[in-house]
Amino acid sequence: MNIFSSFQNRRFYRYFVLSVIILLIVLLKQFMTLLLLTIIFSYLAMNAGKRVQRVTRLSRSLSIALVYIIVMAFIIWAVEHGANTVAHQVKSMIHLATDSSWHTTGIFKEVYKNIQQYSNSLNTEQLISKGFTQLNQVGHVLYELILALLFSFIFSMTYPQLRSWSMTFIHSPYKRFFGEFYIIVHRFIIILGRLFEVQLMICVINTIAMVIVLTFLNFPYLIGFAILIFILGLIPVVGVLISLVPLTVTAFIIGDWHTVLVILVAVAVIHFMESYFLHPHFMSQRTHMPILVILLNLIIMEKVFGVWGLIIGLPILTFLLDFFRIQKFKA
Image (cartoon, rainbow, N blue to C red):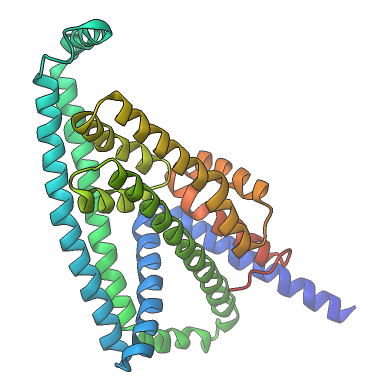
């Protein structure tokens, strides 16, 4: 009876600690994006640093520093090529909008007439206000990305010291609470990191498939488009829709409506394969869950948490199954 009572107390104490963590998340929800990005970047950097260390035999600090140097060089290179591609797209869209040759005949004449009537009825002040709002949101996202990269670099470089310092909490009078706290948080970070690695692999596969299609269609600025597709591919659902704008505009400029149709079909097929085959299949292999459960989880979590739900929804479900010892996650 005493053994059963002790087990019950330990189990409910773990539930209490989990409740405290959930309460902290609710209180700090405005910092969740920054926190999650920092966790993901730190996990990926430390894992990459371990691989570099095994290959180069460099020290831990130098290996992680080398990883960040490579990442920053890639970001600068990507921004340069991506900016050139975006600038080309803006010029192309302006040229397309002012060119009267395609909207003066047939069905396009009526389409252009309706668009022109709609544009004349728009409130310019509202459009400018919405534009500044969107720019402010984009600026905030970029600020959080840069800050998360900085924090992750500091965390990765000083991890041994931070780990040593955190042990003082484990050996404090409240060691039981902090011990459970550490186990729960560490377990969730491992699950989140492992599943995000799978998402990166899926994104690489999608980018390669799309680049093959663009090569077949003789697209210009292929490197820039590959970078844009890869970066936008990290944003579930919304990224695909955003990537359609430059792709369809360029397709119309270099070809005709048949080229646009090929792009739309290719994006739809690749997105379908990602949503209903690649993502569930690879995640199912990692989490050992039925594909239907993963699909339902993605749908529900997207409604509850928005875009972030597509990223952290499955790690949350996997963590809860692991926490309640229903299905153990093999890291």
